[in-house]
Length: 263
Image (spheres, rainbow, N blue to C red):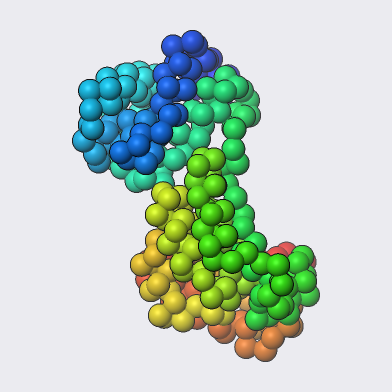
């Protein structure tokens, strides 16, 4: 189906008074589940939860019909859609888009009422001295957030509808409360990604990244030549340590990518 045809189908199914009313009604907080009614309805559709009350059952029924109609139009298998929506972080994505549709209608590109993704420069602290550093990272800044302030920031982003948070820096793993804050992000149902130089990732750290629920790790590697990489990164031995970090993450089954600064 072409993008023009897809847009027409979406306008018919979603950009109407009934669909918008259904979505807006679902954005109210379900006090029992601590999520929106819409997100809970997606959870019910996936089979990962049970209805709480009669109102919940009625609302989820209409959402189910809307999803099934959309699935048929786009030739999406219902069982595949259900499996896809069983992941709480995955469910936040459609909710974010549907909130945008309820507020702005169908647009191209689709307007959202909150950032879909946030890249968080978690700390200015860093153990390398990279020539290309955009932040002049090194020592921790004097005005960095306390752990409690970071928790409140996570709660605000969750309420706003942010889907993934990417931790960057500086070197985020140099932050002493990194794993505590990641735990809070996961508790709020958001996806976690990490951009790191990889040099602090030992086998133990990689296991913690896996256990706490980090879904994606991006590790910097700027040359196949260790000497060139080390010269670019400002610290001798950083190539080998980054390579070890990559291996540890892969060994733990964490989805891992190499990021290269092209010069």
